[in-house]
Length: 153
Image (tube, rainbow, N blue to C red; front, side):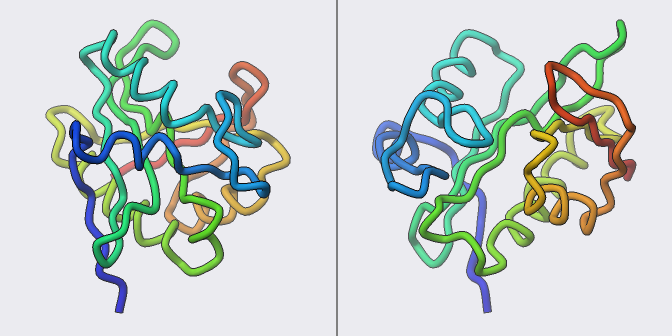
């Protein structure tokens, strides 16, 4: 049984969140293979009041990160799962699928959130599989070189 929850990022845990990585060499970098680093994302969220950041905790261990909230797309406000990652040491164990469900459950509760957008690198097959299993549909459109997906609640 997965004992997973989303927790706030605090002064007690932000370093641990920043040190999570998707890099195979286990060294966090500003630009990771498929996602911007958690450290950069946490800094970005401090300069934009709209982004919500959460750490993914499993059985007392921080294993992932998410950032989501309202943004502009084609002149209208939409909700976006801007960043989502599971540390490379915790990948391949079903944590991504479970964490995504928790994130979407929280997003559904945001005022006016009846659909969620996200984008992924075209060659990120693992992420595409997880997102499509969760009900996201590829819109056959690219944004900044990434494929755009949408899920409706």
